[in-house]
Amino acid sequence: MRNRLQGIVGLGVAGATMAILSLAVGPLAGQAPARPQVPVPGQFPAYTPPLAADKRPDLNGIWQAFVTANIDIQDHDAQPGPRPEIMGAYGAWPAGQGIVEGGEIPYRPEALAKKKENVANRMKVEIHSDSRRHDTGDPELKCYRAGLPRAVYMPFPFQIVQSQDKIVILHEYANALRIINMTNPSEAPAESWMGWSNGKWDGNSLVIDTSGFVPYTWFDRAGNYHSDALKVTERFTPVSPYHMMYEATIDDAKVFTRPWKVSFPLYRRMERNVQLLDFNCVPFTEDLLYDHLRKERKFPPQE
Image 1 (cartoon, helix red, strand yellow):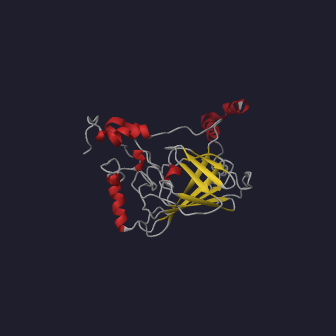
Image 2 (spheres, one colour):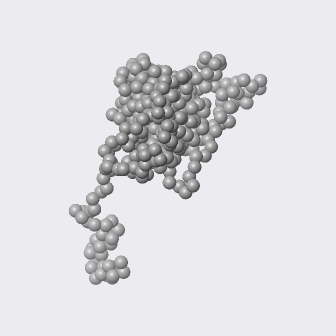
Image 3 (tube, helix red, strand yellow):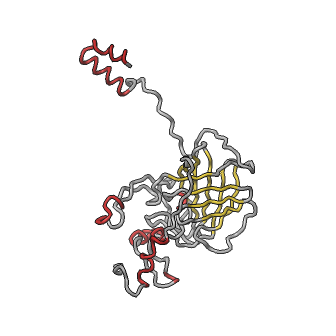
């Protein structure tokens, strides 16, 4: 480097300027190194993942998505969050690229109207009776289980624990737990927030079919939703030691005109001694959900 700078001295102002710029920006036009190839979803170089004790791809570990789909699974601008007059930029929501393949969610016309109603009422909570306790407000707002596939792309990590006959997925958000049956597929005994899951291997991909959902979860804060007819088929495909591709096909004939798909990468958390932490959000929602039951309310009723 010193010899190169000494050589610049006798070049004159113009020559020195060009030489310095070449040091700063690298090779001139026509000499730039080839840009690294960005993988296309579903098109990756062949990768042989390490195997677990059952000779299947080893997916054990803590994983996390780094997308903004929890705000909106479609393309979205940055926007103020609730109460910007108090929260300012603290509560603002970032812009993001959508995860819906093709960009379109094929709503039935009457279902699209419901989606728009959800957006208008996402910050409202009406709990007047057991039959109406889930009618309004984003379920995330109330610390309810996130459902699928939302639990995978919320801004919280989750852990996969793999055995021969079952796979357990533990989500940090609301301490949600999924048990994936890998040996004897069975029907859901009852509806639940996270559904009933049966899994199988398709080459290196873990494929999970889940049904038996309650009709209350949303796909995001933008009010995208489903009915009790929802079926979700997930595919986890390792493509390197540090990440895997995730796909989920959404099938709900009551709400959508056809099945549709979301896809994005999941990344292995690599911090030393990384572990799931506790996000028990129930205490954060008690005033929101139950203040109306107090004899003396702490907060005025919502308008």
